[in-house]
Image (cartoon, rainbow, N blue to C red; front, side):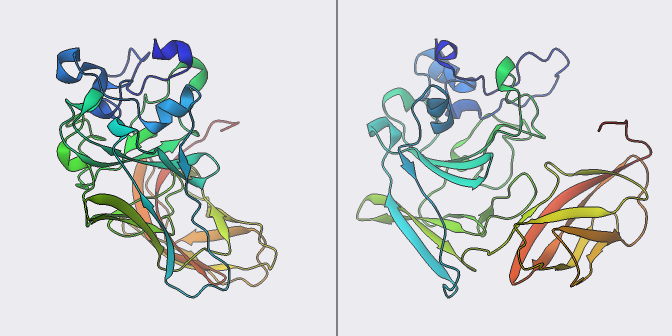
Length: 314
């Protein structure tokens, strides 16, 4: 029935070659394995992204932006949040043109009575992944359309070890974003804000803060990591770089290599990082570190796969 209204399956479907155990966002949504909560007698509520897919958008949008001259750290809004089972909000924060963080409170009542626990469910949605035209959205856990930001930090649901447990839900005192449980966009850039769950006389609230307020620049890396030939450089782009700001810093790799960005005052929007040595063909390494562009510092964690050939058109 939900399909007829436009909802997507949130587990791997239509892929006869898939042999993994990943169940998408599992018990947290009726469009994943939540359809079978309580032996099928008490399927879970649809999450915010599923409600949006059928035409019922977020009930609260949170925009986390501060004036350019704001002094760090910055204090953002505080919002009250009630259980979805009692009509609570579906909160959405846009973190890139195609990505959203969704926040909602889930409790073991009503349709959700068979959930494994209670607390704040945080989801990361990415429209750059999946194929909505063919209902093939959450078929690859390496590039998920929708994933749970697991409060326990062990990513066992993403790895397919379980399909959702109580410790996935955030509790008062927990944090997520730029600190606590980290959230990165599909470029591997850490979001510039964090949220803290608090309880005030029985009312749950979410406080938003930023350690460095809003960056004045935005950077663009390859989505979901890089695939490069041995002789290629690591490139990223500074968007709307009106002042011609350049970037500098180093990303260190798990393969012992590094990527260095030099402070080139003649740089345009494209910034080029040089590898300390060539990579081994058919190898993948994770590179992480801090890169400063103008006055903004970006925390980056991405992968680089080195290949011998890349087909034309790729």
